[in-house]
Image (cartoon, rainbow, N blue to C red; front, side, top):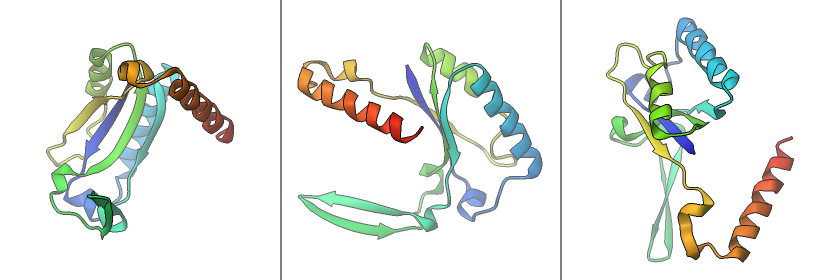
Length: 143
């Protein structure tokens, strides 16, 4: 099972305040633990929403809205993509994480990633094969 682990933003992350050297070192050690356990697939911090954009879809129209965005607590400051055996194991890993935003009330969201089998018969054998080929192509490009 794959899970996306997301750190919610706070005023400091949205202001572009970088983490302290101490926090970077703690997170580096945590990331190394994830990698050594073979569960880390990806993990990154995100720039503030002021450097981002949203594309809204409405009845076939698309509208671009530049950041910054309101509701800081609803924004994502960083993420990990991990592969573990269960939601409980994902929770256990997050419980070991250093506090990512010291001095703030931090919220970490854990969401399971859809796998091909989750789509049932709607993912036809042809669509499944096309998806697998795309994944293999992307993996080759990342090597």
